[in-house]
Length: 287
Image (cartoon, rainbow, N blue to C red; front, side, top):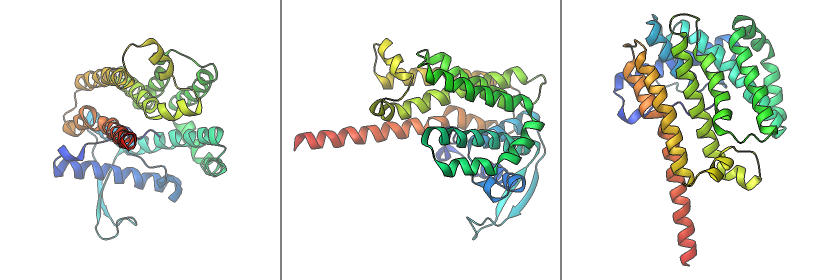
């Protein structure tokens, strides 16, 4: 749904990279077994992070297998699945379902509406199994529509909606780790919202569409890049603090890779893209 919770493969060991890929393949297989081929079309790396996080926290045993993937037929893939894989696949489904509905409302994309309709039965299954998490996503969608309609200017409040929703998704069980998982998810959600607003800022400005960063810039004396970097750094700092309070040893290095480096990959890409655009504009001006 989001696409911002990534790994930095350049600084990972082969063992870490293979482990993350095995969990990713496991999520893909579970989506297929739950929803058929259409389920695999919903796959993203965001929920892979959740699998690794919950596996490390609860020290879950993996069921391992070797498969031949249709997309990569020349080499067998290692697949790891456990209880967290099942949970993440269901969360992946409800988040993707509402993303399709949102795209339909925003773009009137009939293909998205038709795809969402195909997932109705699967959505009902997850709603019955995880009513708290589904209610959190439904509430998030409704409240987000309201703040956009009302042109809410409070960036922190708007970003907090994504945070509250993701906090409930990260909170798998109501046990001794629930508060810390909700906190980690909350700040991760705020980071994701701000990153998304930052990425869409120029396009939203040109189309005169709602973006809370527009109001934040009016109140700030700095530039957009500086403001967003400060906000994003603050959010990830809180995420990291929450993670370090959890007693995770298994896959801790992979999780730190994501939290301290991987989540910044999209921001760095946008910075490079922006610099290239500025250089191109300068070259045209010199002619």
